[in-house]
Length: 284
Image (cartoon, rainbow, N blue to C red; front, side, top):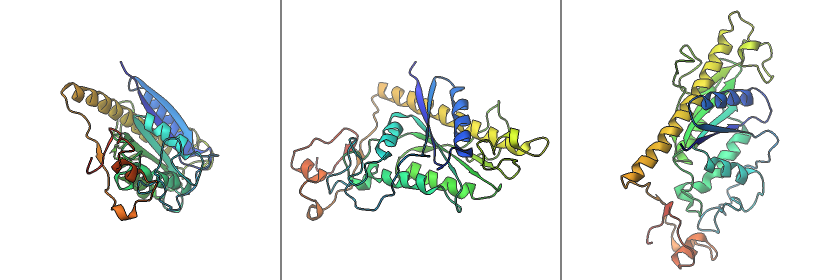
């Protein structure tokens, strides 16, 4: 039986609460079935923000798996390679001024080369993942849901993938912090900025309801992503037996006048490059 992989990404610049919660969700994901997991922390990695040069777009040379960005040779290519190998992705972030961290947002911006409007060599190569979000803040209503929307927009607009929430499982029944995702808070914690600030063992109240609800929510999110990954993986294989294949992604057809001499689209139109099976370019 083929195993699926769930990748966890901690978008915090610190090794703290978010990393712990993503780790707990991955542990729960392994309980679902044949699931392998991996955790990446953005803390300490080099991730530059996109500056809009558009050289990763197909009317220029375009992005490639050797190097997605023609300006920054940082850790972004490595991270997206791991994303491409995963069936499910759990993305976590603390709340910074009402939204996800700048570092995580930069990683998402740098993924523009994978969507249809970039018309790059890698556009359409990462699709149909199962993605869920984990967000932690100090307050119970401290921006978790609005931050979660940023993860969802990346999941649908760049990754063309499926969003899941933290559906309760029998082992972690309601009440939980949220059904929308692994949403957590540290307002009842004796160690809010530490690695375990959202966990029951640091919750000051008795019983430690806040920490319990947080843990249930991220565990259920991990299981939802894992189960969804298995469903997509097995379902895709079943559809192939019926002759139903995933259609290629139609790319934006940029006008000839803006194509640069070494552009990906120009080389395709001149027959110098072959279009990969995961994308469709009008006129081919």
